[in-house]
Image (cartoon, rainbow, N blue to C red; front, side, top):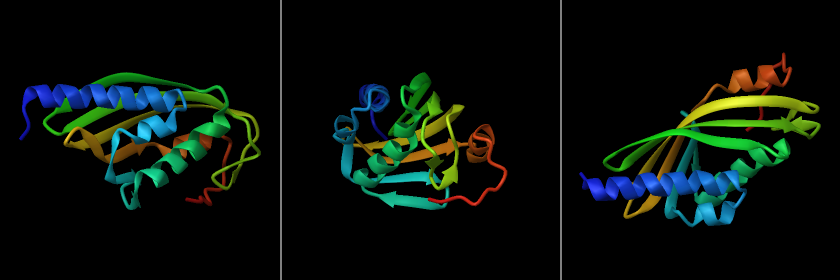
Length: 146
């Protein structure tokens, strides 16, 4: 168990992490993660390494052009920080993760759970409704890639 001061530092690091991602400062966000960082974009999907996480974040966000990402609340306890966020933007590409789309607006809310060790993010778990996103994009065939 860690002390309250460390818990509050972790909470501030989490806030900064998402501010950097929202500002597309991915390399700076990556510096807040440990060398053994693991990302779970879905329960059964594990990506080892911050580079794989950053690549996936870019592929999710860059097609959305001038997107808005807002942190709604952050809750911290011990080495865990939960963050609730919203993401809004227009997908400006012909395809997104292998799915045909064309200039569609999306509004997504999602939760993440970050785990910290020695002041660095060592794990991120994300929870969001993937099918709702695809529905907003007009997808009827759920032949997903990634």
